[in-house]
Image (cartoon, rainbow, N blue to C red; front, side, top):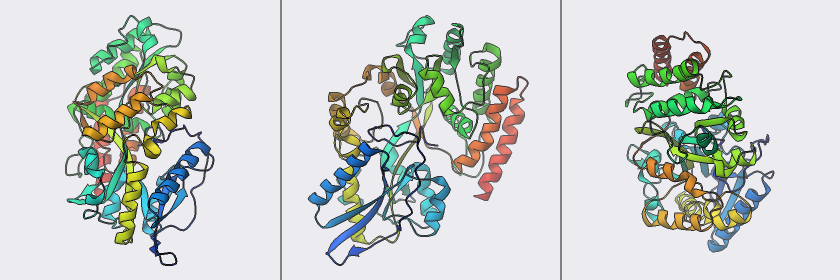
Length: 449
């Protein structure tokens, strides 16, 4: 599940309906006419995102100038990958030479034999060893490397510092456990006037997505390590649903309006009527730019529970038809565009600040060691948001186990949606039966592959 239509660009894209480019993709080979290696790439911002588009195109031109033997042909798309057409493009061999994927796509692309093995080439990618190992592992299947991460995010708890103060809570001490969150939510809801202590999604697969994040925070998993059986009908799974049910019906801290989706909850937080909800850092600019929120009031904490958090993100894979020259060219392009700390399309923080984009959010945080230190130094020097509001998130995330989404995620989320929506809309919902039913349906999904 993407955090907010997850793309780490400099300027927030307006939600417009932009069709995917229908231009022919696929491997184009070397351009024999001019002796250059030609590669097609995707995820170029659409023309409607004028500033992002200009940055992306300018960075490609700079790359081509520095590498005169390479031509880069970019295809635009918003979103970068459309789940409705992705598999069809894969099956039809129409993917670009270097193509965008979500973390959850990596194994599937390899399983259907549409990815090039780049194991022997990444040694030439100077930035590869600086990327966090847990992110690199996502694109490693059976010991072979098939892709390179571009960004990563992890879930946390966004909260309203102003409401914390009004409720007599310390805005610098966010809840660290689900019991603490429940107690804080109850105090915030007691402010009245339509104030909600804690909100959660429960429709359009988003309830299942957040159930997964909450289960991870309790130390549980949705699917067993072998990927064949559900593991939601467990004490950890029951704790997730029981907590939601208790807050909804016992405490009345979640409000009476349910079956919420991300836009509903963002509107509540932006209007100052919501105390807390789960999200990644990229929600914060949306809350300010589109929903009426204020950077000073919005803070971020790690996931309550202290045992784990859901991570997501994206990267690029290589078409199985690519020549060795195209793989090498593609890796150089990724290095230039996305993987140089403090520079490129995602890391030129000075350029971002000049264009009034938020700089200083705690994620994405792709690198380790000296590369991370440099990236954070440049980010801090150009920060235009209150970075102190996110320190708890940065500190707390270090000790959490990072887990990606389960296989067949969207189908599984649809099943879990039913369980989450039931406990939030039915006072007499039977949690044990809901989890038993969900477990059986997930087993069937996994059995079908």
